[in-house]
Length: 244
Length: 234
Image (cartoon, rainbow over all chains, first blue to last red):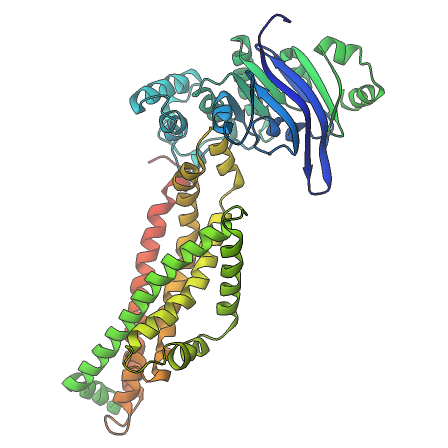
């Protein structure tokens, strides 16, 4: 693991909303092929942390370095093309069909010609079992279908890292497993993943590393085994007692 | 009742009356049409500035436009019309139709700006975030994602504003302009039919028909825009 090229380095990341200090200095590294699950109580800043990485929220201070390049206003679009994001509420573009959702970015960003993008999109749709939804609008899809389309939409750009911000929190129990299965598959194919989730058993199963955030700081990190079986801090022990 | 129908027959069989009505109606349509064009164009500009991010480029226009909409929406239209006629464009020989168009256009812009601004803001923030996360430019996000969804929210209220403008132009008769409303009053006056009921009734029908037509068009547009909301595939 250690000799692998480092993808993402975050140094002393801070974020405040008005007077509210949400992130209080986060240092973090993500290496290629890692699958990091970010856990923490609600309001701990874990979603904000994830959203700061691709500047969905602009960090107040600190630096984010992707492949040796510091993220700035100037290169943020390049960064976002390399760090895909999947949202809690799917955020499929409502005025576009599933196919248009999938092809918009790769074509607009001149990464693919329209025909190539459509072919690739169709392959991915077939893979998730929704080829018949290509010309449907998001309003006619179920939550689970929307989220799976959102995941393949992010994959269309072949990002280096995929961020999942509570991808199953807005889903019914039945759809959750479909979405988790797709994430699991990406993981097995070696995708570098960061995920904020409340699905503990999934976290245990998929993570190569667990990061625990509380009050805007990383309090503890380690392998799932270390984290769940031998927590080092009182705060994590308390957290685990409540949820397990 | 007999005299009512007699009067109707009289109105429609007297070419001068018909001529007056049509002239008045034409002026009403001209003022409304150009005022709405100005209103939508200027309203869109104001709305775009208002929803733009605060920066050194937008801070002054934002301030000016917010005063503008506050003043326009906070004072009577009739007073604004008087100010245009008797203060700002109190120039001999200046065509009154232009003055009226500007007065109604500037007034409508303030309301239209609010309608458009509201329409843009009502698009879910997640839609913009989706575009940002895909690395799209702000311009692409606005033109391809936000604007098409905003228009759907804007059309019904904009239709309402258009209707309001058409009816409100009737106050140009207060500054002596010969619009549909004035024509009705003129035809009904002592020198002409010496009865107001029929010309005013007919003028009302003209307004009503125009607005019914506008409503019909707006409904059609709304319907065609709603296609992406449908839950069933076509």
